[in-house]
View 1: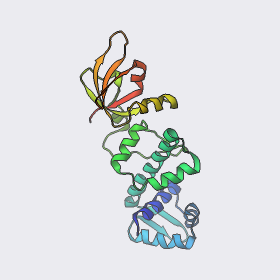
View 2: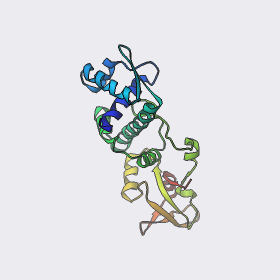
View 3: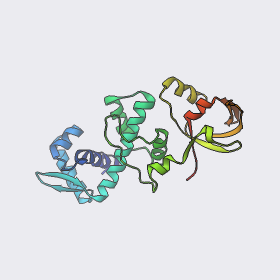
View 4: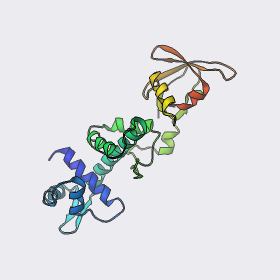
Length: 222
């Protein structure tokens, strides 16, 4: 049984049972666009592998083993939908379908970094809750590891975590300058009297206005 198919089934069962109850065979079939008979066969296989509990004529619920996988894949899917909507401008059905294709290839490390880049969103574009990550750190503590470029001392280096900007044009300008998440920045000089911050970015000196420095959130090690 292919991992992607297993993940897709578990994610749909997770979605259908998020608010309690069971996932009915007909609802799973409708969500996947396949025949109920094919779903029934797959549910038997998932039950044999202890991913779900399945009762004939009633439906399926996730076991602890199945919920662990389903929660991770649902989190990746909803973060990707958020990214496609907020950063790329791909929304609706197209965003959903592309997130479905991407979620299986997204590593755990990439998922954690994507969450930080998006400033740790709580909901997907459709209003569904994004499950918490499995790091042993709260969102509040994780957020506390970020500071703006304005708070980085002269001589110190930090890595761009995310850009807190609602203006798409300004965001694109900053990205075009090279301030992409994951880039290391060293503060060389903080010009007095509210002047710009001179930084070294990939071997190039760049002057950043203080207001733009507030947009750039830098990640410290935790």
